[in-house]
Length: 335
Image (tube, rainbow, N blue to C red; front, side, top):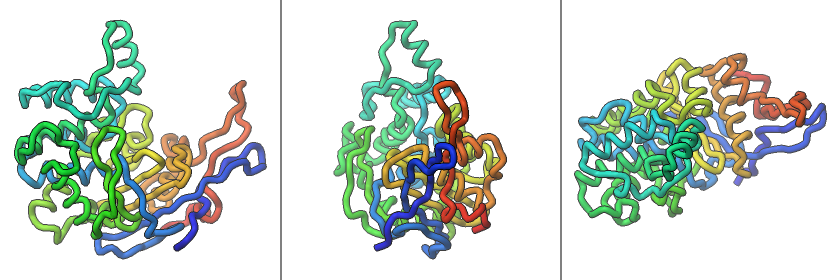
């Protein structure tokens, strides 16, 4: 077993103040590792990074045949609860004759400032559709209509979650050793970094997975690339970095500092985990990897905000920076 590698350092002046260690894998659809750091076989919980895998049964079963690309992007999203996210999820539920009470994700105060202000001024409480995972849950409800099993679709033994686990394990190429319950109450299945990267590479290049899965993977990845703001929201790293690639790459964050990327042009998948769960570190690390893969330009403002964000004083002075560690960055050398 390999130790985690230093991927990101925080400098105050010229003094390194903090270091973030982690693991990462770049893999092709055959499962061959093109590059890795740390332990490729480290078992992790992907959390929300793998929502496009959780949405595969929705599409390949035919349950999502009539869904728009916007709805598929929302099914793969961890959104900030802005009006652009909440309104279409509500319409999606209403089209099925369902409502907020049918979601099992729990309520959440939206991260979007405008929507928080609207709720406050209207004396409204946050709803379940404001939950960052409400699009995924609308997808679960849609799949549940096809598979049956009752309203408690987050139960690990429900047909929806059995279908999700089967698709997840098949895409990762290994049996999951277990699961936890995510913040939205749905199971999150464990796998290795290598397995998660393999799954992302198969989303990038789904040839040989069978007609239904090839088509499903293609629709989901295309939806994410076409609607980056629906996948996260204004100011969010997933959305801004996807836009900075010109729609060539699908990128997804997961809680506790997980990141994945799907690169269809190169047929590659990326999986990354920062051990201490720091978001500043995993945004820096995924930006560094995508620059080295030629998918991002280091000088792009959206990239620079993640690759080398400044450390500031209370007066707003720049007194340091977050930056990729020298061994991990390798001066931006191509991978």
